[in-house]
Image 1 (tube, rainbow, N blue to C red):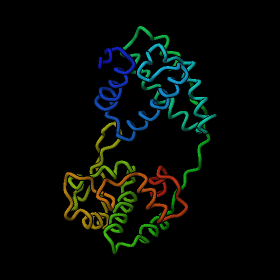
Image 2 (image 1 turned 180 degrees about the horizontal axis):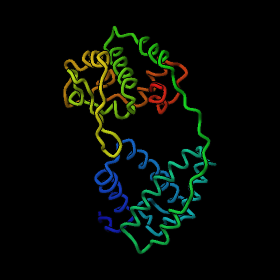
Image 3 (image 1 turned 60 degrees about the vertical axis):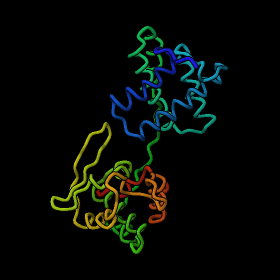
Length: 257
């Protein structure tokens, strides 16, 4: 099997994810997945339009006209909202900026792609709970089981710190200090580290689930022993608060005013 040329579309796609997104930008796993899914959809659409295999696509195929056709396709055929369309476009723009850095000979071609504008999106009203309501949701969790203790600690941690769900799910026991000064170390977007203080009740809840945990494993795990996912958090929140329907609303609903 022959290797991809260093300036081919496949090679530059690999360098975008490995060298740029992960090494240079320090993008989170969530961002990498989102960009991967967006480019996968775009390449599938592009291959269909060009009647080629994905492996046969070339840099010359990345044109503003095909990107616009793709954006129309995901809105009309896949029923994507303007927000989703804009997210797909953002991923393609970031990829094309990488192509431009590596392939200035096609600067005009890439510039036309980068000039494509986002669509105005209708922003939904952010849902949130009043502090008393958030406290009631957390207090309603049955802590008589190990799973209930995990859920209680997770919800209390999110309420205490205002952390993103992805940040909380990436925590390991070594990231948490349960003695004074009680605190937790989060790794945020762009691998930026920040320290948040912990309430004594949050520390107590975390202490119950950290006991006996391997320091190299993520703290919040499913009943099968695998890392808890965003969908798992969405499920436990819907169970605690039936009006919640989206995992992305988790932090907003639990954050304090």
